[in-house]
Image (cartoon, rainbow, N blue to C red; front, side):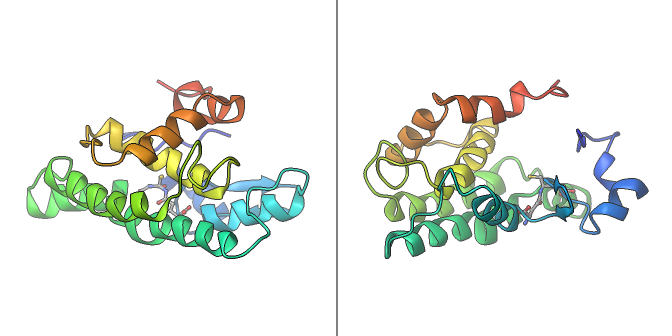
Length: 180
Ligand SMILES: N[C@@H](CCC(=O)N[C@@H](CS)C(=O)NCC(=O)O)C(=O)O
């Protein structure tokens, strides 16, 4: 079910959605009896419930390296660039967070990710992993906010290669039923 974050709509803040997800954030996964928020929890659920497609490598140290990469985005980069943070900076400090704030924290985070990633074609070599699933949307936002990506050739290449695959095309924001 589409949940719009658009200003003036804010489906994620209505009572019906809050009853499902007290954090009032998207995405939110419903699969049978399972109803969970938090992207990393969802990705691990899908990994365990649908083991025919493996996105978390079994072997170490790769397994942990993929988790480190995912958490660098989910715990450190994404939270400070989130909609409610940007809205708060604008309303409380009368500053435009889409200028310096967004670009600064994306580039700081991407510097580390570029170093953490391995050679392509994907973030950790020849197989798509959870790292790619987490990087693609963060890169989508970086492009949307016109962050200079010249220093991140491995990340850009991995995302471009993912975006050639049907699964990533199907999941792209512009290909969703409620995209405007
Ligand atoms: N840690 C959460 C973050 C979820 C999150 O912040 N989602 C954003 C969209 S990408 C959101 O719902 N923002 C609404 C807001 O900030 O009000 C996760 O990984 O699922």
